Length: 495
Ligand code: NAP
Image 1 (cartoon, rainbow, N blue to C red):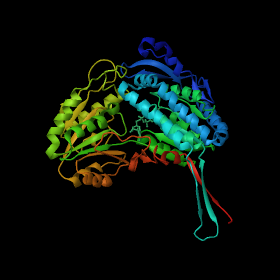
Image 2: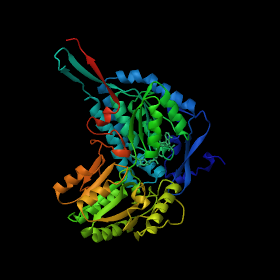
Image 3: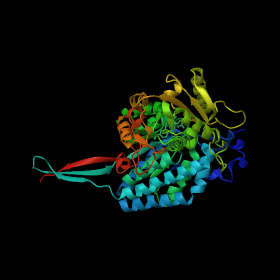
Image 4: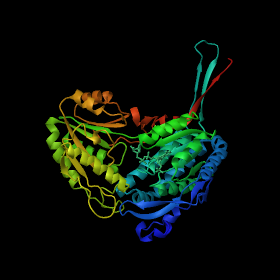
């Protein structure tokens, strides 16, 4: 039985998924793959196949690069106001279709509908924000220090961009790249994750409706991302690689991009510390922990991965977190009541299970959860572990699941040293009533983003990104995100 024959229409929650799996989206049209192969898409809450998308061959990638290259000049010359209006229309359409998009995300990714709705709102906002930025790209003009001439600096679109995104935010990771790239005047080829391609294709149809010209955005899915990406990066018209995903793949792509000196933006893995001082507002810290840990069931690069709690508040925090985590409703993401959906794959569940077993074998106490249930779907229960050893593997690796490990600390300097004891540096969370201490600790923690007395950092209006091995460059923010898709051109005048 082939993949298409295995699809049971009753498993798609009223969505006609064939609409989002029409083909590769190249030059404004839907194409079958030249490989003739397909990639199966699974509902993580049942483990059943719900759709299939084409598995692009090298020739398809070549067609996508050719389309993006052919469209580049027209789009670059399109007036910023016109580009802005098209982006604004993308925002409006996303908002109009938000419920359908949220359902689709829930279905293929598994996340709870409430998280999916939040993602759609966040993802759409990148279009509104960049619609506003598109008309505010300015240059510089000044007199050379020697007084002999003037210096003009113009900002130009960098060129054709290859965008690669992960499965954990299928809409937002794509729009966080596409919107600034288009605002800057670039054309793009998006390669979404194989687990969650339907959202990317649903959005491609929406861009077209919003007036994005053929070839400006191309979307292709493939089971062989390595060779296809290497091929695309070797094309001389491709000038940018913007990647969001794991640090391991990011390192490999940086090496690949180096062969042709391609500009790279890298949004990579995290290992966020969540630091609670004795003087913190306990309820606010617990509220923050639930957001920082459980948004997307822990499948977020910004997820609190190590919860450091000072001795004086440790027991109360542990009990409060246990109570909240144990009472979460686990179920299919598409069920409106669900608070914690399934993990993306069985392999992800096995990894979490391995990390929890390792931690308990080193003395961690299970306060709730901790064992994989039986039955269909890729579920892992919300889990709190107390007294986790700093030697545990989960102290150094992304858990990417609903597991909150607690570590006890005594002093501020100890908390800072332990928070920084990682190769990652994406997000960090600090809870204290002492604002001066909060800012002091924030300045000493090695991370690109700090949340002070709150559990959420992401905001399209703020620069998102990491230091150390969490990445290079920023997305969103005033000028930051758009600057990743532009080159400065300096013109020296004769006067
Ligand atoms: P991943 O395995 O690195 O995959 C990310 C994307 O890269 C997917 O589209 C994947 O395609 C593609 N890919 C894999 N191998 C490739 C190769 N050799 N060449 C080119 N592309 C390749 O990451 P993931 O499991 O999808 O996502 C989870 C990771 O992303 C976590 O580490 C998380 O922290 C990170 N993340 C970071 C941010 C951030 O903003 N810093 C945001 C979200 C997620 P296939 O799906 O076809 O394998």
